[in-house]
Image 1 (tube, rainbow, N blue to C red):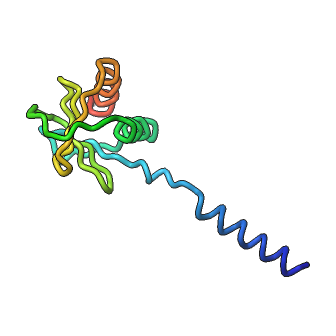
Image 2 (image 1 turned 180 degrees about the horizontal axis):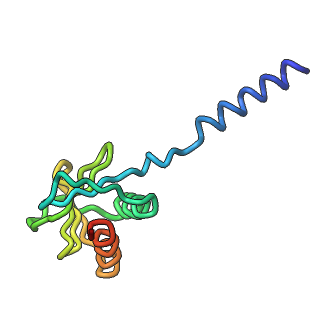
Length: 117
């Protein structure tokens, strides 16, 4: 009985440790095309918003030729963004998303918030 209790405790601890989610999982950097040396890290809320948007949107399979002034980077993504048109461009996977005006305004507001000195 004692061995079983110890075994269950150890398994529970392993499960808890492996199921913990690190804040770094959503870490996204913002790089401005006119100042590439000044990387900025998005807040967890901003990163989660973009990750959700990118995961839940239907990407179109081609590249839109628009000037993108911002680049979002994480461990596995490089996404360009046009603040004027609300276009996310994934050049590596040849796809893009055009967001709604409301989404574009929200994204532009937090870009302005973290890039405005």
